[in-house]
Amino acid sequence: MKIREIMTKQVETVSPDTPLKEAARMMRDADIGFLPVGENDRLVGTLTDRDIAVRAVADGKDPNSARVRDAMSPGTAFVFEDQDSSEAATIMSEKQIRRLPVMNRDKRLVGVVAVGDLATRTTDDDVVGQTVEDLSQPGRSKR
Image (cartoon, rainbow, N blue to C red; front, side, top):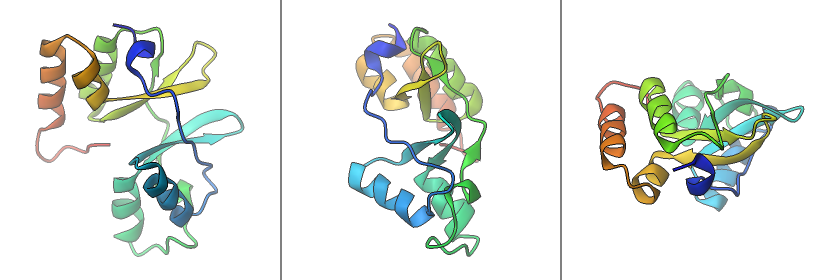
């Protein structure tokens, strides 16, 4: 199954210069825990609710003045919309991440695919099971 068939197409993005408090509100209002970070029409990283908690708040940064760039993961992994869902599962397993930005071949953001999308929208139980198992290993970072 192709990524374009299972991805979420409505994607919120955030600028690296956005205050963390505003990014957190965006996540709350959209009921999401992941935002692709874009600058100059290019994907430059990702921000998760966990990034805000661990890289900013836990380190004493003020969410009113700290910026997305202070907590984001730069240089993110991604998948192309015409790739197979098993390729997304492999990337997620290798990188220990739960969500991947989806790009078209012009490297423009067109969606997001999450491990939950793989679990509920594909029929390859072996790939899904292995991916979930790989992501569930204790002590590994999960985005």
